[in-house]
Structures are given as structure tokens and as C-alpha cells.
Length: 122
Image (cartoon, rainbow, N blue to C red):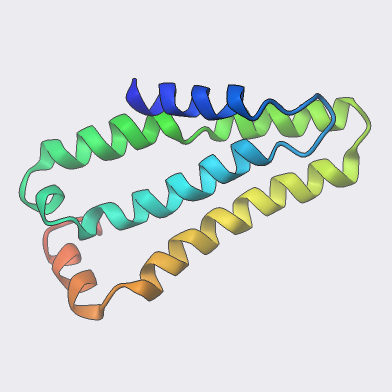
């Protein structure tokens, strides 16, 4: 619930008119993707399964919102902003993947190996 409330707060604070680029949702998904990728690097999450579930599935799962990104894309299409919809859809996917790759680059191979040894790669 905390993640969903944070997402709601951001999207209502930065209310974007219909037919405009929905950057708050894009940023939420990119930041959330990066944080999810970094979660196995937290020692507490590796030691206690419930921490990963609480923070990952719970808070960050509620914070990220690919369903809202899908709705935003279809709204842009409905409003005849086809190019903007395509840029938004592909941009969201590329930026989220970029965030995950950035987390990978910012971590050490030892930290990644420790997370993988803890079973986070399964």
C-alpha cells in the first residue's frame, strides 16, 4: 500500500493533461525498476526473505505500474498521438532496462556473486 500511495501522490502532484507525455508514470517505472534491480544487493533482503517480499513485491510492486503505462499508451493512441504513444511505450521499456543495467554497472562483481549465491538469480 505504501508504494501505491507514493505513486498516487506523484501522479496527482504532477497531473498531466490527456494527450501529453505522461512523464511521471515513466519516471516512476524507471526508478522502481532500478530499485527492484538493486534489492538483492541489500544484505537484509538476502538474509531475510520477508524483507525482499515486503520491499520488492510489496512497496516497489505497488509503486511501479506497467498497467498505468499501458493505459497511458492507449490513451495517446485514442487521442491520435501515435508517434508520442510509440515513443512513450518503447521509451518506458528502454529506460527501465537502462536503469537495471545501470544498477548492474554500479555494483561490484563480488556483490552480484553474493546476491546470486543467496538464490536471487532463480
